Length: 179
Image 1: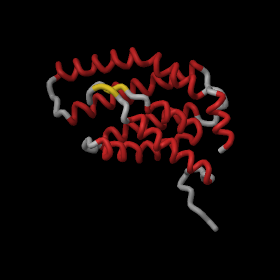
Image 2: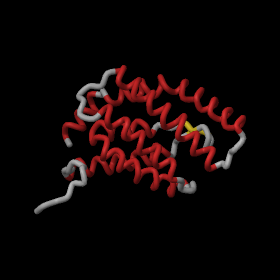
Image 3: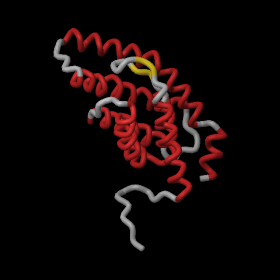
Image 4: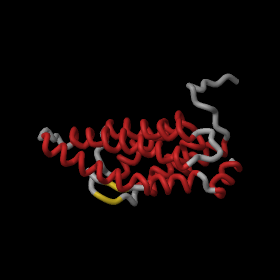
């Protein structure tokens, strides 16, 4: 039987089941984010990193698309397409950096997290927040931007260390080898 892959690698049943479990875990973890809509702290980047390492950038971006829409609907927030673009780009950056690597160096993680934080969290998400909030005052936008930059500088080493430890965890790798 001929199948169409659309550029995505085919998944075995165990891999598809594990992807579903990771997606469910991402939904649960997203419920525990702290902060306001403009400055939010969460840990879903850990699950995105695992999906990126195990399934690659294309599956990661597809999952990010679905997860953003589903989490927006579940959390009761209005859906905004810009955050879906941000999620896709973040998953792509993680995927292209981590996929098919047995061990991932701390330098690779630090650089990857830097690009995600800069491109997605500082630039794109600030743009989306100003569009949603209908903010046109330059001073207000700059204040928001500086606040978000400071938050990213604080969380850059924290996210890098957590992601490095998770992606190089022997128990996680054993689980991956079994699927």
